Length: 398
Image (cartoon, rainbow, N blue to C red; front, side, top):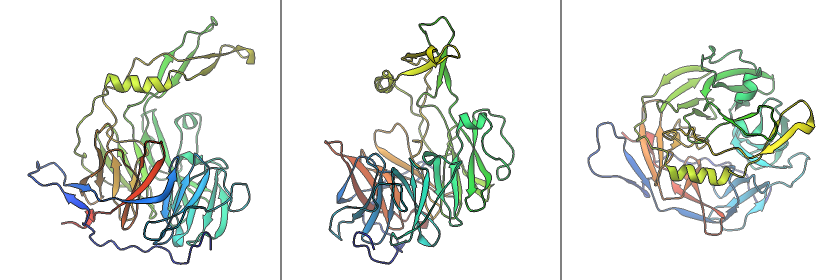
């Protein structure tokens, strides 16, 4: 028992909970999906964070939340329970300790898997947060991990730089390598047996090379990915279902056991242009970046400089916000639309269902559980707050 937790994992119902979900009225175009508006949020006043990396329900009355910026794993009481937040584990390198807890997943038998972004360690707890074991995955950088399935396999993404340099094994799964040089594999590692295979391919934004004017006469240059470019992204649920959203056509590919099962039709959306104001805002936060470039093979030849303002901007935004994806156990794929004044999520299923879910301005969904949608927002003091909404029974609607 930790922080007053009692035994008993959450087993929420999936009954139709529509008390706070309003279906937009009025005629819809034939291709337009139904619109669901979430309102009537329940604030969780005990929760204050600098960042939310992961969230799971420990019991009906307690959440487990990671704050990777502070390096703290919190137990958080929900409003009906009352009480205060508490550290779930101490800082350190011992069993059950953390340096930088980032992501949290539900594993086999309702176990809880916490990923440490600094030590690259995976720590497994029982459903009541008792330490069970930990393991490391040499190949998988913590910030690229996307999930853990019921068999204990770890799903993560290769980087473009590492893959081009001879990345990890590509021995099974989505077998044929695409011709696109800007594609990287999504990988599944069976940690116990150290067996690695490929479950899908992802296209990343091609890096745009920026030539630099250096103080040395030697030629130099720098490549970096500019914002707003089209790219793919993906998520996985506990059953090992992988959903890959394609940025180019805004379609979703569904993979089971590394094989493409079906492709959803294009998601209804409007193309959003990148404005000059958004370019200015991006540049305002990056113009102070310093880049080191070697002009010869001697450490003394390292030249520090500021890269120039980009000139090759993407004309339109990616249709969704990268790394904002959630794939539920019920096979609902939640995608936050990019570039919206309002907050909209496109929700699709392998069976062809599609909905548009709207939230109040400034909200970001961090978890979708059996009964609840958890979202964060930032107050005037730059403190991140947590609230929850009744989850709409989307895939059970006729």
